[in-house]
Image (cartoon, rainbow, N blue to C red; front, side, top):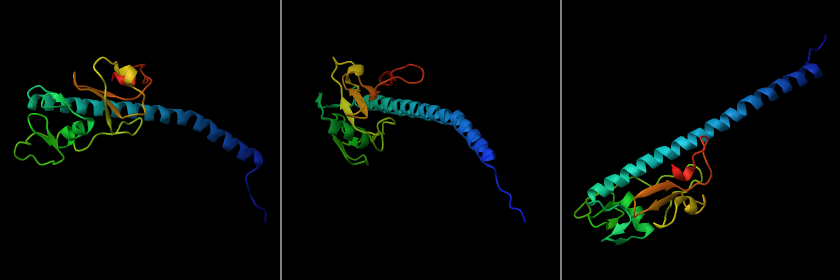
Length: 167
């Protein structure tokens, strides 16, 4: 009886074809991954911006980041989004509106930045440009309480040449 097996030439040919296919397919997956991150970032920004507007409407035009007309700590900002709050901006962790804490919650939890995986928010001073504040590592999000602007903390540009921080 004779045994049949693949020759060395046939094996090399199959490996070469697989290599060519991989070289064609792998870049397409990385492009799709980048597009998915861009889309996720834009969706989160859209949601957060709409919730900031809702907060402003319910708190007589005052955006999150203030309590009794003064600046609030970032920890309070977190509670203003995820907990319930009074008209003056005081917030608690409870998610059930009761008594004077009748506004909110606006989101269940702070969203994750699809690029760096961080969920925390950093304040940006009114005089500071977002592009200067963006470092991609210190926080997931950037927020100017004076103007209620909410941005992605990530450097660089997307596939269309738009800076991530300008989304």
